[in-house]
Structures are given as structure tokens and as C-alpha cells.
Length: 586
Image (tube, rainbow, N blue to C red):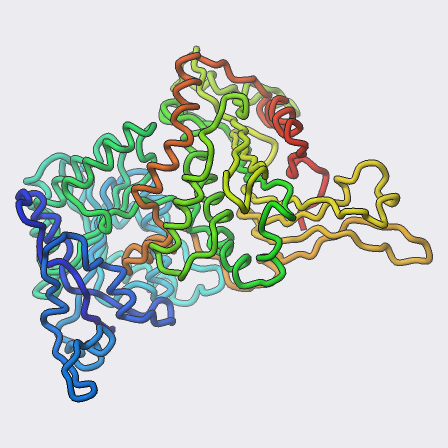
């Protein structure tokens, strides 16, 4: 394991409260750099990402003041972080520990996603040498009972099954449990004592994953900050969506979190940003000359971001009914993808540079208007002798609920690159298929010599780039091609990168990538507070209008293609939904 010096604040700013000092303890000068699945990341860069130097104004930087000097041209000059790391490697006895505490360990998210993702990282040798996992929840449970619960959800990589049982046993030995209330500082102090027993005298780094309802986020953050934060390493907190219900509640949550944490300690997770094809967006655009010149209003006619599920709420409607499809999918997942897709070229791949460009996109957009939105709700439908229940048939949903389970919207970016290009979003439950994709429809070829071959419908000749995020990940480009033979007949073909056929390695789950990034202090795929504010500003006026006017959603049958109104919305901007064609997936 390699370690690096870190620029950081030694304590809270002048006049900080005792609670704020707890947050300051979460920012300590110990940084961890380790082999990321066989690829070593620059230690100094990882350290700089772990804690920013200027988090609290007026605090002297201990890493800077402690650094020795070197001589250049006969004069002493300050040694850089890279130089300092080379000159002063830490001994093996000073190795750091990482403790990951899953708060809400008995819940579905923890069991189905977080623990399996942590095991997958361990299986791939992506976690640090010294790590421990703690589950924390109100349920009474022993360490062995937690291990039994976790073991039922663990699987090994398809492409790497050797020593699977042995790896599972090793992983489970590192899992422990502590029962406590979420608002009890005393119970978190008890947790802190257990953590210290495992950490020993090493530098301790702590990551808290809040897999809990948002109404108790602040209770947990306060207790963890005051009673269970690291005193000599970093402490970070991963917060799951929803981040509020509108601009006001989101801002209140952010203010509450920042009573106990600074922004760089808060990792707001949107798991769609960790999906392979979403992370590949910037690679596809910025490293391929064939695409970047086309990425503008000059060549792109419209962009479609589509999310569909082929199942309903299935007994979980009580939770969903408080938020609806717009808050659950569009305001976060799809809008985040849109911002990544449409942003200008960042000056580097550093987290802040990328997030700055995303914020610029969001601030350039007009708030959504009711005329540019269609909402729907699925109803009961019988197909093949099977009756599928409607949304309000769910016993956890009120009979008079107007919560949309489907929404389609047209958004616009008011800048030079995208002026006039409709970005169409569509998201729904209980539809005819399951998937998520980005569709880029290009403009017609001016004066197309072969337009007679396509008849009067030039849309059939439109080039289209499709990025299929899930399932069956793929990137393909639709082109026009001559059918072999003596005649001049054209058809539409695909240049297809099908991931399962091209790559033998299994695609990691999004939670694996995001958990690893949080451990390393990499914030590129997490949401910053100003980014969150800008996102809510786009949707809050629409959401308030829908609720105040009690707009009734258009009903659509379970398993259908959604409300008819979505087609009229697309037609309003001379667009056809690309996912409703008869094309076959390659």
C-alpha cells in the first residue's frame, strides 16, 4: 500500500461550534492511495481530491507547513506534494485503515446493492488492505446474524469464479454489526468504541453510507459527526436520493448537512452516473474526432433520454406516491445524463472541472412549462389471460392518487451550442419494455441524392446514434447502406458495438464504481450542492403547478407504450420517439 501527504485543514474556522469542530476532525491530513484493481492512481492526486486545502478560510495548511524545502538556483523553494511523497514515504507500521459503516444495514438497498458491491470490490482486490465493514440499524442482530443475512446476497464474478467460497468467508469475517437508534449520540459513541477496537493505533478513515429514509439523514449525520467521526483521518458520508422534494426542501437538507459537514465530505450518490455507458459518454465524445464536431445544433436534430420499466410499484407504492416519476427519475437520473451529454469540454478530468461544466448546462436551461410536459398513470390491464393491477390497485396507494407513474417532457438549453434543439425525456413504469437509452437523431442530409429511395418519409433516412445504458449495453450508429446487387436499393444498417460480444469482462455494477470512488475521494460522479440547486430550479415550478392545479394524469394500460399524449408532445417538435420503432436489438 502507498500513502501520500495531503493538503488539508487542521480544524474548523474561527468561531466554529463544537459540532463544527466534529466536522473538522473529519478532515485530517491522512490520505490513502492504493491499487485500484491493478491500476495505481497517482497518490498526490488522490490526496488532493480527498480533502481540499481551502475548506475553511484562515486555517494554516499542516501538510504545507510541515513540508521540507529544496534548493533551486541556490534558493530554497517549497517541495510539492509529489516531491514530499518521494522524499518521505511512510513506514508499513503507519498504514491507514478504512471502515465502511452501512447505516440502515437491514434494509433492501443495503442487502441487494451495497453489501454485494463491497464484496465485488473485495473479490477484485479493489479495496484497501486494512478495511472493516460495519452494519448499523435499529434491528437487534449479532455479527453472525448479519453475516448470514449478507451471505445470501453475495455472488462471484461470472468471469472469475475461483476461490469464491474462500473469498466470501474472508469478506464476511470483516463484517460486524452494531444496533442503535439513528438519533442517539450515545449509541454512536458505542459504535465509535467498536470502530477504534478494529482500527487500533492506525490512522483511521471512515465512510458512512446512509441507506435510510431522508427524514432521518440529519439525525444520523449529527450523531456520526459528534460521536463517531475520525480524529486523525478523513470521514465521508454518502447520501442516497431523494435529495428533498423541491427547491426549498432540498436547500433545507443541504443547510442541515452543512451544519455538521463541509461540502467535500458529502457524496450525493446518483447510481446512474456510475453506469458503464454513462461514464463512457465523455470518452465517446471527447476522444473520437468523428463525434465531437457533430455535437451541436448544426448537426443534431434532437436528443432523447428514455427510461422504462416493465413492472409497476408492486406493493411499494406508498413510498413512490410521495415522490412520483418526475422526482424519482427525471429530476436526477435523466437530468444528470443530459448535463453530461451537453456540457462543454472541461479544462481537465478533475471532478470540479467536470461538475462546473454540468452546472453551466443546468443554469442555461429554461424551467419546464406545463405545455411541454405529459403525465400518465398506469391502469389495470388483462393480457394473455393474466390481469395486471393498476397503480391505485396497490393497497399502499390512496384511491384518489394523482401521482404520475409516467412523464414525458421537452427541455431546451439556451446557449450557442444547443439553441433550439429539443431534449426529450421520457420515463415510466409498467410499460412494454425495460431499458434506459440515449438517442441522438441527426439532421437530414441537405439535397440528399438518394431521397427517392426513401420515399416521402425522410425520417427513415436519418442517422441515429443510440447509447443503450441498460440492459444489454451497446452503442450503435444507424447508417444508410446499399443492398448488394445490380439495382440501387438502400436499407438502414447498424454499426454496432455490442458490449457482451466485444468484451469478455463482466460490467461492474454502478454501486461498485461509486463506492470505490467515495473511498478514494473521487467526486467526479457525485452531485455538488449548486448542481442540485440548479436541477431543482428547473423542476420545482412544474411540480408545484401540477400539485396545486391537481392535474389528472392520462391513464395508460399496464404493459403498453404509455399515454398517447407523449406522441403529440414529440410531434409538436417534429420528433418521433426512437424507442417505438420495430427495430430489433442487436
